[in-house]
Image 1 (cartoon, one colour):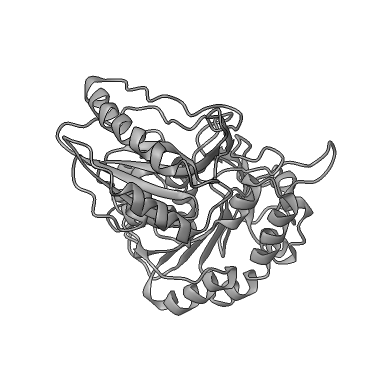
Image 2 (spheres, helix red, strand yellow):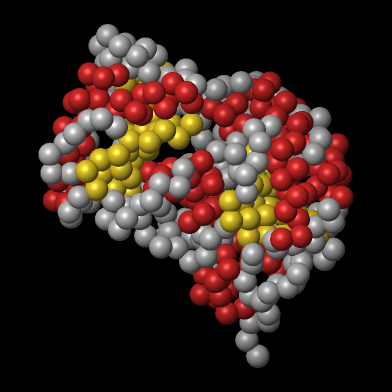
Length: 401
């Protein structure tokens, strides 16, 4: 269901505060049959205690069986129908580094990767090169000139960068060149309409030069292109929900996504405790806080089960500081599952809890995939989470007479 018009009419401004704590890639799988997931393995006394005071359940970011990207997963968390409002990763990356996109620009996310002598991908993330190396490579690629179009390459973080093509009548209906697995070559560009065929011509010309520049820079000796996208305006949290919203996120893409829906972006350090420190410092200035933890997802993508467990335990240790602020509503969940045994996103539903003074707590006493199956929320679409958060904060008027 698309809630935007309904919530625009029902929402009201109040001083109550909502915190949405998102552990990226939270959901997991056991390493062996009958074992425990990363979340079930982690020692989480504080999250368990919070779950015991909350209503819990499982969330499907898009629909059962559909594996979500990070963009759609977060849009659903923010109450936007992820199919109607889906936005390509390129625009999110560009906005995340405050790149001044113009109407008609085509933004594309770059993943620096490693290929062997036969052009076969051996590492989709080039060993997670340093951000300094990313800056060096982006500067080299930014020198490429393609007749008929203006292009700009900017570093993002580690193996991520963004390229923007600026010209007349460019389309964004192109398939990613990332096959999402190692052992295969990059996928050739596949445009789906004439305007996108024009874009593909410019991109292929640029790619030919980029390959030559990157060839000697092992492990980042090739690149993959993802999320071809042009920009479109989104309704904001202030317009739809009457919230003064802030994002505390350490990775650029999530900052970009929050910015697109009208959140203020708060600077934070690089460690987990820095997220809560920033929250504490800004507490009196906002009525909604999106707090994003990336390292759960990174560990899952790297196949590092134990590291993901450690990150979850690190978040758990911060819960007392969060609760000492006396938030009116706390939501804890993820944007998608990233099981370490899969080393990537998956379709598995996510555990979620909603804490408030009027949440009608259920019998769940542990924050985990298995425990949340029995929760009072049941299994629902993630897009329904934001209306529930607003309702628990008593920020919604009655519908109808």
